[in-house]
Length: 427
Image (tube, rainbow, N blue to C red; front, side, top):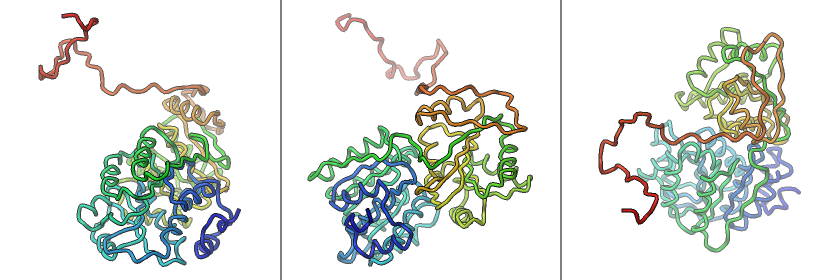
């Protein structure tokens, strides 16, 4: 089915055709007609399935040929969790709308607000923003929300994981009640479901449409997943060995901590391998330069903390390496989803040490299968990682540490709880 059959006009179809898009993906087939019908939508689809086009294309169709936007006003608001993802979505908006008379911009933190506020003076049709920076602009009265017709929450699960719940609530309180709501997420958990539940009160004419394209926590079939069991102190040596012996053309390497990212870059450099890193402490200009070099192929090996897990969109990224295995199965899916996109082949390699066993069990249990293991000659593991338990269920951590002191008492007697009585009527 071509895009023209989904109700999109010729200028939009022409733009996406020039970008090489011929047929819509499953999420686009299902979502675009729903959005064009003006319905509220909650869509769950894995990373790399074309979610951005699924909401941007019908959004452009709805906003096209309308009256000019008012000063400091916006018609469509797209919220995204990270600067990188916001920039990527804004680039997509610009590409898809190049044949239309619509304006758009992106607003994110880490840079001065003055230029963004000035850009908003004349108003824009579509604003892509991170929650924190959008509130900054709202507090400065640089943007008004009275004319917002469409709200999009992109990567909603990631926004909730990053603690943006309060910011999103404050933003929702400022928006008109009569608006269209679109929520797109790679996974669906309780916090995202609760957020989606608020949509029922903003559009009272129709029920919210809920679609799910893939099962929970599934990975694209185009990704070849495998792992290597390794001792922690030989990880960097193994990575260097694989880069050199396998002659990797490119790799996105995920690591947990930012100081570890810088250390790994130095270790690779000592072995003659040029790499760079992005993390929260690097300036926005530096991050943009590094990402640009990586996308162009000038930089072959990028070490990144989870901040880049959803913001990178590289057409044919060969492989992703989990140098550190993530704690959450959902994060594993997001990371490896950077490769094998849009039907392309990809490879996902994970380094697993003995201390990662529980995380590995949780990931494989969520996937529903054991990840293939490979042995690398010359790398004998001292601490053997057992075979995974597929039906493993991670025990929830206690919310507060237990007080082991028998003499410890509350500082304020008024806050001390009364003993629980077995019988309500007992005096």
